[in-house]
Length: 254
Figure 1 (cartoon, rainbow, N blue to C red):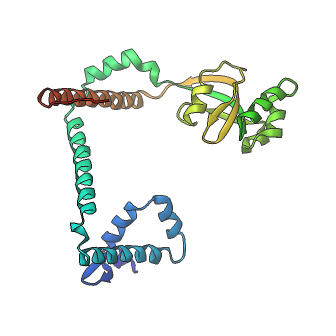
Figure 2 (cartoon, rainbow, N blue to C red):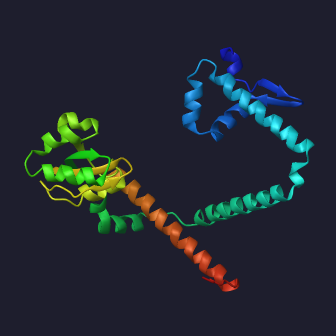
């Protein structure tokens, strides 16, 4: 395609009377897992492969209409369920969007009560990552005779083992939840019991609690506004639901 053509919504394929344009291709890309898109688009024939699949789906639509699948009981039930689920999501969004934005006074009050919540403590920690809890307990046992760095180099499956298991400095939100919950509740020099995450089992050592980073005022106010907005939306949602319950019979049977 030339640069001039790329700026136009040109027809790039035809399936029967159906024209497939650049915009159709772009929408199709958005509906696919982005990891899959990146994989194919990095291949020499990636564009054609994805376009072929879009064509295949249009052929399936032709087949469905020829076979009158839209009148099948299973399809009509699925369509009704999908429609209802979309309506629920749409109604929820409409309701929470009715919530009023927090005022300057509300943000000021929230900050006066919660400003320290936005501080970001930095820590320095090391870990030994293994596959099983048994291996983690074995590592802890070895720490009675060897240094943490030695055991990390010997047993850890994480690339950080080359640095004696040291992960460097990090703050909240940078590690998986289970790891974060453990390390930010430890004392300097403390070694954890085995901590399970999606990666395996960790033995963690908190090396140091560094200084707390305080975000600038504009960042804090924006984060406070978002948190207040979330709270107000939830409160409004609950109010609407409670009002609906007054006019609708609801029975919980389990």
